[in-house]
Amino acid sequence: MPRTSTRAVLDGAPSADAIRRCPLPWYAVRTNPTAERSAARRLDELPGVLTFLPLLRDPRCRLVPLFPSYLFILADLDRLGPVLRTQGVAYVLGTRFNQQPVRAGLVESLVERQAQLGVVIDERPAEVRWQPGDVARVLDGAFAGLSGRVLAARRDQVRLHLLLFGRETETTLPARALEAA
Image (tube, rainbow, N blue to C red; front, side, top):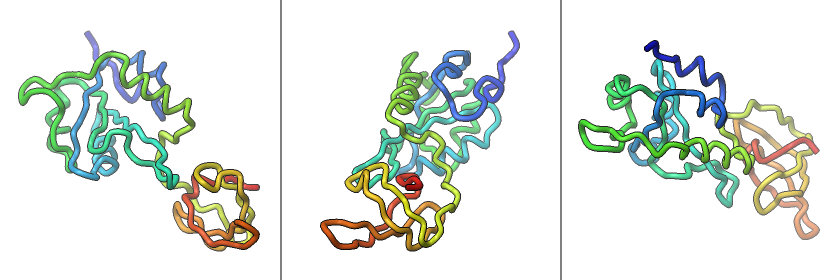
């Protein structure tokens, strides 16, 4: 039986429909502490391997892993050797010689839930589009709904003045938590 290419089935950010069409199983991967993102980037470079790192927004509007030190990979069993040798990967869940796929439907439900909550699945840094003097509205967190004037921006952080309790307050927020006002 010919193998289906993971990249051919899952083009771009994974959707629950695309994941259901893929015949390969998902595995849970234990990463070294705080190495989820770097391990996911390295695993994405392997041919025939797709990663999914479920994220959520913490109270400070940061995207953090839903399961610290864990991510999911879609791969064929014969591709697990290179996965285990990837920097940042501790092991694939299961026994030493018998890695166990996760329960069918688990990753699909995580992808659907993440999409419903509006959490960004593709976590590449936002391009710098904010210029000093721009007006931005905060989308998430304690300052949601407030607007402020941009003071400076770099990669994925924007420093701005917000009007709080009748006085201007300077704060730094993730670029993803802002939109043009």
